[in-house]
Amino acid sequence: METSIFLNQLMVIINNLLQNIETYIGGLEFSKLSDILLYNPKEPLLFSSGAFLFIFLVFMIGYYCLRKKVDGRLLFVTLFSYYFFYKSSGFYFLLLLIVTVSDFYIARRVAKGKYPRLWLCLSLLIDLGLLAYFKYTNFFAGMVAQMIGGNFQPWDIFLPVGISFYTFKTISYVVDIYRKKAEPMESLLDYAFFVSFFPTLLAGPITRATDFGPQIRKPLHISREMFAQGVFFIIIGLFKKAVISDYISQNFVDRIFDNPTLFSGGEVLLGLYGYCIQIYCDFSGYSDMAIGIALLLGFKIPMNFNAPLTADSMTDFWRRWHISLSTWIRDYVYISLGGNKKGTLRMYFNQMVAMTACGLWHGASLNFVVWGVLHGALVCVHKFWSQTVLKHDRRYHPSGIRRFLSVFITFHVLCFTWLFFRCKDFDSVWIMVKQLFTKFNPSVLPDVFMGYKYVFMLMIFALLTHWIPDSWQNRCVRVLEKGGVVLSAIVITIVIFIIMQVKSSEIQPFIYFQF
Image: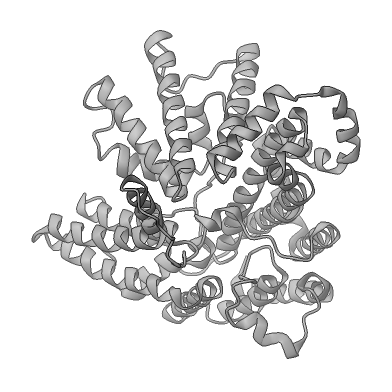
């Protein structure tokens, strides 16, 4: 598709969508335009919000007007990315600027080969130091106070959205240069564009310079297939987040977790199922929208989820769930510790350390540490059973009834571990477990299914779509490709209409924004 033709067709989308967008935005009035443009902690600029859709459509016009001016286009997107970050974290966007500038120049020092380890340590000190202060100060200070018997009052430290994601992005850049797997970028603008690229800025996927860098200065070209894929991923992501995840959360899951003693064990189990589906649809929905938006801008970023609820082991789960994080932990923690090169016992130890770090990455709480330790232990148990006892290949997958049982068991083990992820403390976990095993009461389940029939219909739909072959997705993309911009506008309008019917009055933030 020629870019000039694409720009004209983009205007068709804008004309169609603006006719339906006012209600989705929530009654946008020009007198309230400042509320949309300025930072408001209660109204972050979310992909699933009408305000973002409105601003993004305006942004796209400017983006394609600058399509032939590479530096102008990169600067335009970078400035918008910083504005996007400002809308989420206020003036803490300056942290992103500090990390970007420092790592850009440190990486160049590392590449020169004079005291590279010293410069690498400085980079890690800055990146991990900022991450530790904003995310873990209260956690570790509280632990120390508890050990010495002190009375600790948590300090009022704001956690900037996305800090866990962009610090990992910059760390991988400097480490890859230190390992001589990449060359430093020549332009600060290019590097700022890479680090701040707004589709992936707040909640991933965690892109790497080795994959993303070569695309930055390529001529802008968006094929019909890329456009159709982009629209498809945006539609799927919106539906996952704003329809499935938000609806089952507000109408069932939150009620169970907020007051578990009011519900039977059977309802608690259904709430666990619901949260597993909720967090998948919420996070994968964000990733899908990020991938789709990037495609509309002419960039390809890797998939972050691959039907994780069909995993037949916890090892398989981490090959399918938050792939950009699991591969980052593998490459920069597990392998840095020695991986599987220093014997079996050391391999298990390295695996436990890596998964514990993964748990701590998710949040400054003992709950997340236990969650990471549990996942590490389960991965180690699976590796021992599969590779040592059964002598299977590392990529072995069972088939037939064995696969069904493996998926069934893995899913339920996964649901149990989500307790530590969702509950605020261990007492809440214990209450949920107690309700589950002592007050199951299956007689109430028929009434529960009828009372929450739409919730369970969405949950079943989300599970069934996990098993849809990739060829079906490719067919949907081809249909959108043949239908062109008009069909895409119609489908997006339909999805927005559905969202308007089920959404609450308040915009629900993405779960992974807290990490």
